[in-house]
Length: 454
View 1 (tube, helix red, strand yellow):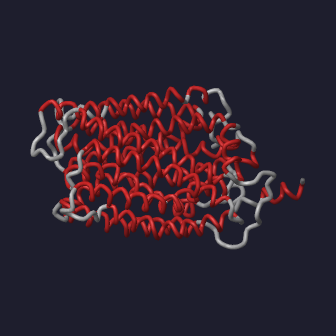
View 2 (view 1 turned 90 degrees about the horizontal axis):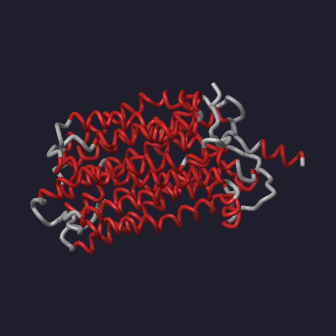
View 3 (view 1 turned 180 degrees about the vertical axis):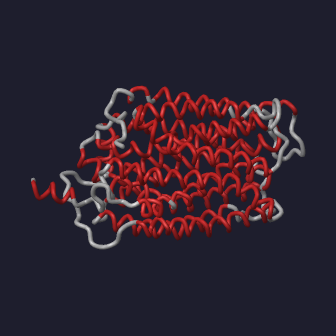
C-alpha cells in the first residue's frame, strides 16, 4: 500500500509551487496553435465553402456538423490509446511532437481545395482534409490538456498553467480572428487568399506547438501503480462516478454551441448586415481579445472570492450580455458592436479559463485511481464535447442561413435575409450562454465551487 502511494506521488513531475512562470508561459504558448486551428475555420470555413467554393449553405453546414460528430469517436480512442503508454509524461510528450508536425499541415490542406471541379468535389475535399487534420490535432491537444493535471497535483500550479494557456488562447483568438480575414484580403481573396492565409498560419502553429513541447520535462519517470486499468469500460465508470464532470461537460458543450453559431455567422453579419469589411472583423476581434487579456486577472480574483463555479456562471452571463450588444451594430452604428465585443471579451476571460481549471478537480470526484489511469481518455471525451458543440453550432448556422433564404449563388441577398442574420448572430448564441449558466446550478453547492488559494 505504501509503495503504491509513493509511486502515485512520484507520478507528478513538479511538486508544490515549483512550476516557474517562464515554463508555464512556454507550455501555454501551445494554445496559440490550438486556438488558431479551431478559430480560423470557425470564422472562415463556412463562408469559404459557400461564397468561394459555391457549396450550398445547408450542405456545407450539415457536412461540417456530421464530420465533427464523427471526430468525437477519434478523440476518445486516441485518449484511451495514450493512457496505455507508460511512463505517462514522456509518452504524452511524444504524441505531442507527432501532432505538432501533422495538424498544421492538415490545416493548410483544408483550404487547398481544387477550383472548378464542382461543389460536390470541393465539399468532399474539405471534409476529408478536415477529418485528417482534426485527428492529427487530437494527437497533440489531448496529451497537451491532460498534462495540466499530470504534471502537478497542486491547485495553484494547475491554475497557473491554465491561466497562461488561456492568455495565449486570447492571443490566438486575436491572431486568428483578426488576422485571418486580413491575410485573405492581403493575397487578393478567393482561393489564393485562403491558401496564403493557411500557409502562414501553418508555420505559426508549428512554432507555437513545439514551444509547448519544450516545456514538458524529459527524462525517466517512475510509472505509477494503479488499482484500475485503462479502457473504455473504466472511462464509463469514471464518468458515472463523477457527477461534477458530467454537469461541467454538458454545460461546456452548450457554451461551445453558442460560440460556434456566433463565429460562423460573423462574416455574414459584418459584410451583409453591418456593410463593413475585413478591417471591421479585425477590430472586433482586437477589442474582444484585449478585453479578455485585461480581464484574466479579474477572473482569478473572482474565483478566489466567489468560488470557481460562481465565477464561471457570472462570466457566462456577462458573455451573453456582450453577444446581444454585439449584434446591435447594424441598428445604430458600428460602435455598439464594438462595445458588445468588449463586454463579451470580459466574460470570456472566465468562461474559457475556469472550466479547464476545474476539470482535474471534477475528475478527482470519481475514484481517484480510475480517473488518473484513464486521464487521456477523459480528456479526449472533454475535447470531443468541445468538437460536438462546435459541430452542432456549425450545422445550426448553415441550416438557419438556408432557412432564412440565404443563397450562396446569388449576387445579392434579400432584405429579409440580411435583417434576420444579426438575430441569429447575437441573441441566439446568448441564449446558449444563459442555458450553460443554468446547467451549472447543481455545482454551486459542491466542493468544485472551491475558492482558489492566494
